[in-house]
Image (tube, rainbow, N blue to C red; front, side, top):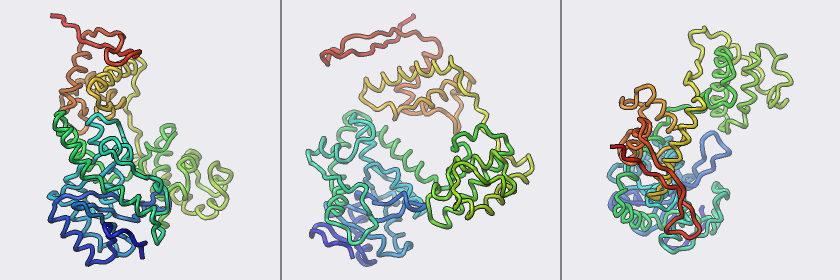
Length: 412
């Protein structure tokens, strides 16, 4: 049993209680959510607690009281497009929901994203946001505590409650602010992007050779071996329900692939592999290597051939990124939500190759929607030769501050 809480905080440990909560959510069509989980001990994060706030009432759902499929109803409710779901920093929560339900919420409001578009800073924490917008001081001392323990402590319960009890008030204030600033559509687009990213559960990043540092130095046959080794490690980690790194590190697998290990002698004295790991995994490692070596050349992986930017192009990218940061500062919006450096380089490459206007999966975000109107259009003008007047001048609003001054030069 969970530790008792105050009367306003209800624990859900039965199917009857869960159905009652779902009925309440469907009635109000608005609820705040948060998940507590432990990510570092198992292959998938271990879900430990579901917090929900509906019409001012707090509910704490204990996943350990239910069989996994018994929670399907709560996931279906969260993913119902008629239900507006409030989160703060939703990315990891949405990934867990997507994995457990094969769906993601269609109607979310992420207060962290909303705060960024409202000019309150990039990746602002809940404690700081609640203080700035509501004047309430939260205690956030249990962030890394053991959420799988039972009973939960009173400190953990207070922490869990605090994660959801202010979400609706934050949402109301942020909505007003975004509407006044004309940025609600911008934030809503980012909510949707966040949900789509989380729903991409079919993408096996654990098997992506491009994510292994140093893999670009391997030839295609060695990449084939690495691919088989990654596949074996992923299956073994799932079977044992352990994190990937507890099986073997990326660098250990890279070393094995580099040596094209085909017999036990070649596995000995490799860096990054303990003796106990070698004893336990020698046979499957050799099997994976042999499988990679046996692949026909037509099935060998190919490293992406995207040409690295030249020094000149990198300099152009740096210049455009400075302009982008200036645009972001001028409207008090984190530049990360407009574009990052890699996206600017992609934008330049598309322009050089004449693909900038072509729709498709690789179309730069800077050519879409509000990003194009805010920044993409101006960057295109600059790439086309439009001249700028740049300088540094005293900030009229802040004493002893200097600001960057940039303006387009009218050449008519």
